[in-house]
Length: 531
Image 1: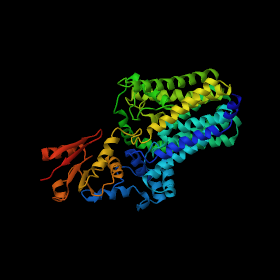
Image 2: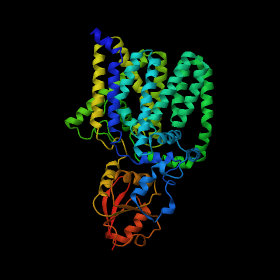
Image 3: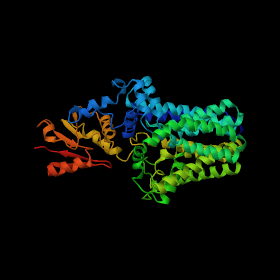
């Protein structure tokens, strides 16, 4: 048994686990449907959005579908010089503005194909592994704890899901870890260098995600609760960071109405208090296991208690109980720095979700990517429990560690091939539509790229499809289809994302000539037969 304990102090086992986790990510990175929000990422990388990415002069013009898929290859566009992109970004209000300058630099190195943007996320995940090693080592004063943390996050289903999309999620995770690390080093050394780096890390993180404000609040509680003697340098650093973010806050405030409208989709679903609690706990479970086919709405308690669903429920409850035990153990036995850094992040993260869902009537408790800084705290609490018990040579916890790694790896294996990994509910419908356009024959898709951010959704479908004979006609509410569509040119004419007003006009005009092909959560796909 002594040989096993000695082996666990060496990095070999942990590096193998890390390699397995990275292999799953590399294997899956190009499998998933490149969905609308990821297309929006490309728009924003050019300093634009769906309302101004497309040339409105092309309205009422029929173009091949490749025209629109070529548009998202930013390296081939005439208005994609870096200075111009950064200039447009500087006046475009965003909650995650710094993600896009990084991507503007990245695609010039790695290529401008849509999947290249996902590789930036994977690159950030590798940096997460490195920075987490130093954070866990500083937090728990142990290299073994650092290796346990790195191996666990490498195969964690939760962090797997946020490491794959071309979104800001894993960059924000990296920013949180770096901010925590700089604060710890500043507290441990009390050197001006580290307090200055902490201020810079905070500024960078604030521009990566507005949610860094809650991390700052957690750090303030940490200082007030456990480190009052460091109040002055902390106050100076956090003030500098706040001042560094004020110009962007002012831009957000000037565009308050636009930003408010951008968050209205958060209110699509109302949650009960029970839903809020169970979905937050669901994120805790996802740190360790996710055996079910992953969807946005994966309730903790399945609707039908089949034997398989009961097994899923048992594994999720087991993971939740371990997470709760880890938090309690940290409260009772944790070092001052560990408790002070981890617990406020969990508390403030959970309280924010409850506040938003109760008072703003949102469903953020369901949206796992809004839980990042809270889940990171729970993750570190689990690392603390496992490391402490394993360092005391408790064989039972060595077994628990092995079970966690096994269930995490099985979870990643089961999600391989899942093309709708935590995307919107219309993902499968979009894939089916892309296949429909590939059917032999000439097809015309009529759409309005400027209504309800439909442009990103339409381009996502076109990017998925390999149709050779698909043309696109963009219209407005005033467009006359019979004048715009050449007679007897197309085998099928489809209408999608044309807006409610235009849809009503066409239904009244064409009646039974319009038939429903499929009903999707966002919009109906119609087929129009012109006489």
